[in-house]
Length: 342
Image (cartoon, rainbow, N blue to C red; front, side, top):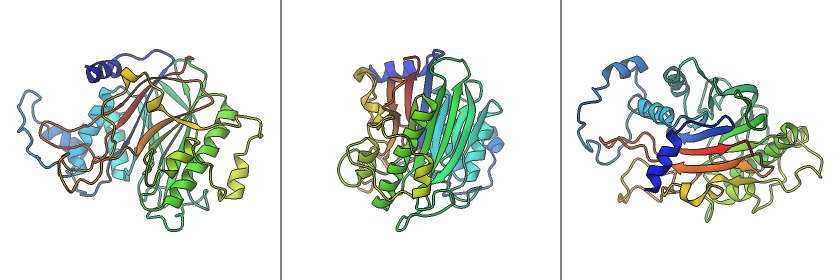
């Protein structure tokens, strides 16, 4: 019953002061092919045809050309205003742009060269509900203004910053959204990344006087091993002091402005009856009872700045698995409903 009411809420029209955000690690295009979006659309069976139930019973990963329609369908059905992706390669970014059409736009760069090489942490947004005012990219490393890898990290990591204005004029004017993907191997990188995002989010809260949201794949659960990234951004641990000094000075604010600023986990800020039973956001391409699945984890989040200007109406994690057994990703999407008119 709770999941049905949540689904009805996310399918309902939004008030002029509302904002619906989603974050989703898409799983990179590990099985590339030359099948175009139009080819996939043309090959879809009739919606009246009964599928072969659990044809992919083991949940095995399918090519992006199979998964992309399911990703776009879910996001459109949730009627989101903006969503952040992780692990998307340039083909995946352009495919989603094609599927969403001219009323949508996106910002973000490939992490390896700052243009198109490597994975994107892009932010897509509906231009009919959000007006882009500013955006930039910074790398979560010792040299934030150029493509760079933190020492010991498995991959180059970055964050995408955007500032929007609600096209409806509702809410409190400016809305800041940042999207990121922390490293899966280096705890030091996760600690630095969380510290940089907290500093930048506080700066935006002071400068914009509006709500600030941070979302993405943190590779850091709320508790236990590797939880330091989560703990830093939520204020349970202090930030590290190794942030690039020049970059930190650019985003410094007076000590008496938002001195206790932290990012709050929005799952814990929604009314309890409007939080999904589904908790884990990483499940792998395996069925729940598989010994090879590894531990399910909650490592994908949407956070809201403690400066306020928002109220969480609902928070949900959803598994996008078709009747045929195809999983849209090895991560589940997270969607949050916000009221900015408070």
